[in-house]
Length: 88
Image (cartoon, rainbow, N blue to C red; front, side, top):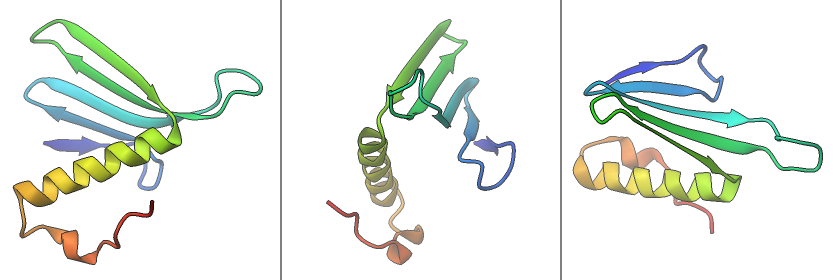
């Protein structure tokens, strides 16, 4: 899996897995008074599909916790020990 990003610390992740592309990045508010969101975009050329989700910060954090837990379960030798337990 190749990770591609504009700059370290930019908050953007673009990765390619098996021909699919996954993009995660912060998005500014869509209009005045709206909160910022996190964009999660999945493109699968094999199935000719595009899926986009706009997550609020709480949803993005919950997804991040679940992804970390799944990664730690899949590879218990990973760096999970240095992380502090999630808040809330």
